[in-house]
Length: 406
Ligand SMILES: Cc1cc2nc3c(=O)[nH]c(=O)nc-3n(C[C@H](O)[C@H](O)[C@H](O)COP(=O)(O)OP(=O)(O)OC[C@H]3O[C@@H](n4cnc5c(N)ncnc54)[C@H](O)[C@@H]3O)c2cc1C
Image (cartoon, rainbow, N blue to C red; front, side):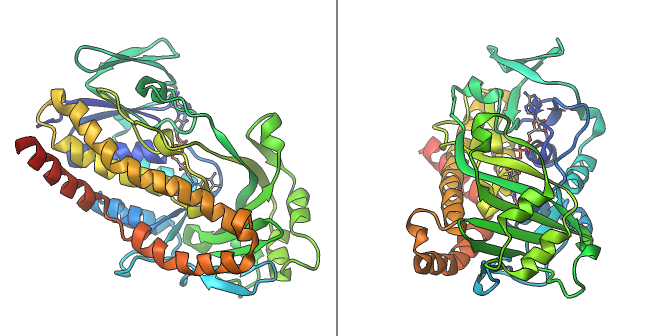
């Protein structure tokens, strides 16, 4: 068995890397060191939905109660509406067993909760990975600050611009979606008293606006997707004026309730939406990938972090089953084969969901869009929310063993 003397490096102290550190320590029992390029752990001032499929994992890791304490559970299912606020359909917000409901989290709060579950001694800030060298046994990591260190294995959780990804010979081009989002949070006290404590999406004129509660309902997250070629000519994100966002949803063809919400926004920033085609491999020897480094997806199904959390559980299960550090490459191969298929489906599904929200391609036919959205609710619940990453990995492990000893 791998043990506490097995040394695993996790590159990236984002939501994926921190969850991986917790899972690998608590389930696989290995010694983890997290290397983060920034001088402190943090996230952008916006929200993220922690979905039932990830909560199932966080529950097993003993972190869910802490997440719930600082998050916001909506009053019920979310709604998809047309531009004037007429209901198109309700949205999935819980699993079939009704055990877990979507939780809206302020990103810095989620990072704090996860970081508190990781031994601070094992987090090295100001360490930007420069290269990963494969050794006869294990890997040598070199950092831009001149430090280098050897480990039994490395997990690249270093996001869309992953450096570790090059070491598994994957060089995907980022694909621009044609959309930017305006993001940020609103102080809930600035909203009308009867504002609905649920997730709401308005869709019209090839753009959409989403909002949902965060932080014990003290904040509301917003994400407004609009077509733009801005990221093609320069940076992928930056500060933005509230008036420029408001102009995108102005006029009598948009719901006055939505315009009232927008009038409460004090600050926003824009963010280009990029993904990449599914990779053809995530692992090479003692090197593997996790989270956006492995499967950047558009945000329209709210699954990027949730998949990183699922990855963390699966990786821990396969690593725990490794007999010794020499078996880690096989554990990583198994992890890759189980996780790649699911995340590739969700990468494509997220593009499709975005096309629906913004009436692109075949969804310009709004009857088709609305029909697909209605059916999508049940699919999302059963295929996405009911998924048990631990059970799937354990079942796969039994299969791998049967084949191994056949
Ligand atoms: C508008 C929007 C809304 C979204 N909403 C949701 C949602 O509701 N639910 C959901 O599940 N997902 C959502 N996502 C997706 C989610 O934000 C990402 O999938 C998630 O942040 C990925 O986490 P990660 O830890 O893999 O990568 P990241 O968050 O990118 O973290 C990578 C970390 O690695 C560090 N790093 C990078 N390079 C290096 C290096 N060379 N050396 C050392 N450290 C390095 C970075 O500083 C960072 O801390 C949304 C995304 C967007 C854009």
